[in-house]
Image (cartoon, rainbow, N blue to C red; front, side):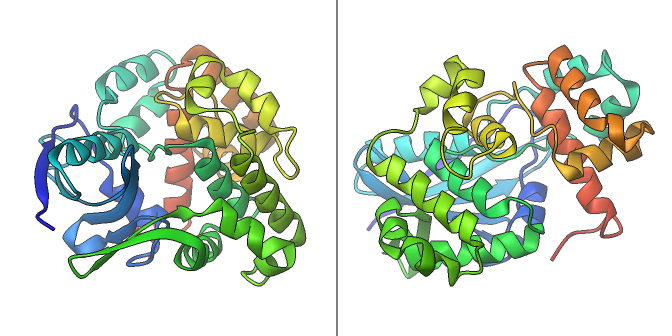
Length: 311
């Protein structure tokens, strides 16, 4: 299959490699495979004509960014669609300069944090199903342990393509999760509650009961309430899932331990007040509040490892 080569030129500053360095396992699918030394992301993406294999190479971060996209697909239209999806996943259209300007009006220390990690942003999910499965696995679990579990689920249950000698992965198939059931999922190292929650979410996806991304964008709080009706989906998981599919950051996982400890460290506030402060920050900059909470958690996670990369 002849690959198609395209280029995405994000709004500078743009940085995504550092997020992948710290929130993926090198060379393991989650569902993307991140080849750190090459700064190359490899994954399957769902297009209107099925999965397409995509490789995205990150160059010139953060001030002259280019994402060089190679798509293994059956036609130029599919390749263009797959490239747009990758652009959405890496949030290439996020105006980080506007974000920094807004944060500067809230707190000088948070503005300095945003400048320190110029352009950095988390990835965006294409569906609430993908966001929920990822978030459920990460509940109350060390990041590396959660990534290992999710990687195994992707390898065993994810959709995949084998093209040009490469394997491209996508998130776990909901039918396969339902087929494994609670006991089958527990063999991956999940608690019974998490396994049951995954089966519940996968069943809701198969039955068309999960809200769509457009609903989450129009009314995030209502969708949070809908998701909390699912077994095993509490406020932390529901809010994180919604912000993972939203193009902006109107919500945040306020009670997240890394967020609270990060605010405690950066702002010098008592840990008991951190959740209230997190809510205030999001209220003052609703378009970007969740992004500053992400950077706070990111900085805290780095500080636990001496400020270096996590392997």
